[in-house]
Amino acid sequence: MNGGQVGRSRSAVVQPCARCGARWAVQGKPLHWCPRCHGVLLSPAPVDAPADRRNYRWVARPPGRKSPAAQPVRRSGSTETPRYQQIPRWGLHDRPATEAPEPHRPLAAWTDRLDRLLIATAAVFVIAALAELGRYGILLRNRTRLIQPWLLWISDAAVTVSAILALALALLSAVALVGWLAETRRAAYANVGEADSRSLLSLVLGCVVPVANLIWPGIFLTEAARRTGDGDPRLLRAVRIWWAAWLSNAVLVLVALGYRLANSLQVQADGVLVAMWTDLVAAGVAVASLGLVRAFAGLDLQGRPKTPHRWLIATGPARPVIEPVRRAPAAPVGDDAVVGDEAAAGDAAQAAPDAEQQEVVAK
Image (cartoon, rainbow, N blue to C red; front, side):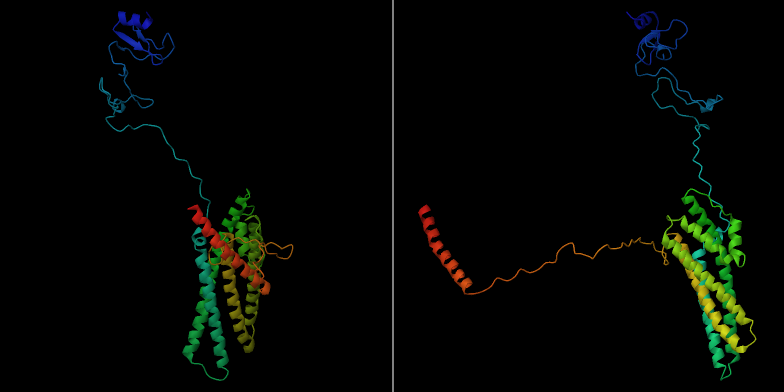
């Protein structure tokens, strides 16, 4: 007779073991550990209690304090799931993962509209070039005939308004390009695990200060291109094309200013044509800037993803892998061939009766 059986005979209250299932009689203070397997002893319960009945009460309390409202209500002898009288005000804190802070974008308001600004700038510069061309046509006609005042007023208004609007859009596009340059350089340096060595102030000064803005923007773009796409030569070529267009536009601007300062009427008339070409080159610079921005994003000028191509140098002449199909030569037709055909036909006719005779014998 084990200890559990002795306990049942002497006492009406026992403690079941959660590990081995043995029941130990309660003879005073309840025990905590099973003497046989050192398992946890459950709370005292009557001997005749069913085995599947839990002889303990599940209580949940907030940490650090005891709140009766936060304890679940459970009836004695009930198998229902414990429920709360109200929603508990405590629990585990499931803090979401903190997202990395977005990089500071001081010129984001203009950088996000960069494509539209460049397209509008190119369009307005083309309009300004057409206005200059119209004025030059009026000057040619004025050599022999008088020009109506209203036509001169329209021409002057078109030239002035288009020039002011083009300069304003060019300035806004320049600001947006500076913001785009800072973000592009940051992403390019992060691509190789480095930090941009140039501050935003140095980028702004290099792109704004006269004379310096002819050299430093190309250097800034070249540094970013060499760290983007493993130094793609096509990206470097796009930077060089933009740089050449930028320098050409600066030279034409200086030439146009020189023509405007001349005293000769003929030189001033020629300056109208120079202004027209300056506006056209400025429109080309805006288009080249748009192509450069999209080239850094892996797009073509129309905004479509670029399809990579690789050209290989052939080491020898091209040879077809599969030989061309050629027709077989026709068999010669002669007397011998005709005789051979007649002999073959006679043999076939002779073999036919023999086959019929063998078939009759077989039947």
